[in-house]
Image (cartoon, rainbow, N blue to C red; front, top):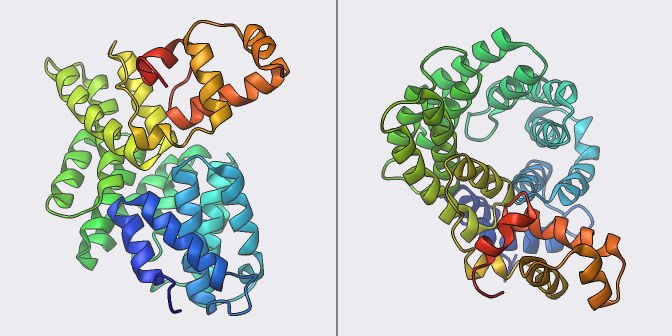
Length: 324
């Protein structure tokens, strides 16, 4: 693999939160050693590569790319052992993103049956299954799996696995301890490099703090959201950015100007349409100026909103700043 980054290096970058760099490395590996290459990776490594690509794509809101990578996993689904388990786990993530919770549960449980001894870092199937079960109304089963994941992660000694397990438990626990689970998760990650997971936990914690109505809840939530907003913008984590923006809106706070790295994600056409919309032109006026259809303008704006993590035209001007 001369000149091609190692799979371990790429996945470590992703875990550390350097999603942009990690995705570039994963795509280089996919081009040279993916399923369509002349020298594909062994099955376990191939499933790991495609699973990591799916993780990155979903983190950036690129669902169609995630689905494509999922289709590349299809030949592995009928196998046995760890490779098949990893393939089912990744397919479970895709199914969950598509809103098919029943299929997601089936994939995650199959992954657990195929590789019951896999570590919680490598195959966190219980966490995925718990979140999907919650969506299917299986709240008790979800809580049981989440608690089991916490215990297994604790025994593994992995801070990353433990923090992720506690985050899952906070999501499915119907009791009064959600904030405590997330505070514990933050403490577990202290001193480690896991910026994306930290930003996800901070966003979850901000949301739960706002539900407590404690005197200092809004101030604490705002600090957490600003930190998460910076990480999400820098690494182009558009779904997370969208969650942060919605919570900031609830606080009556304006989003900060999107960083240069995030702005670079817009195409030339998207930047032009965004600038005109931020200046107050209607979709029909923009279409007339650019000699395109109104539907084309709408299509560009939908991509702009997703990439910038905003939900409406009214947030464009504040998000883009004085110029694009």
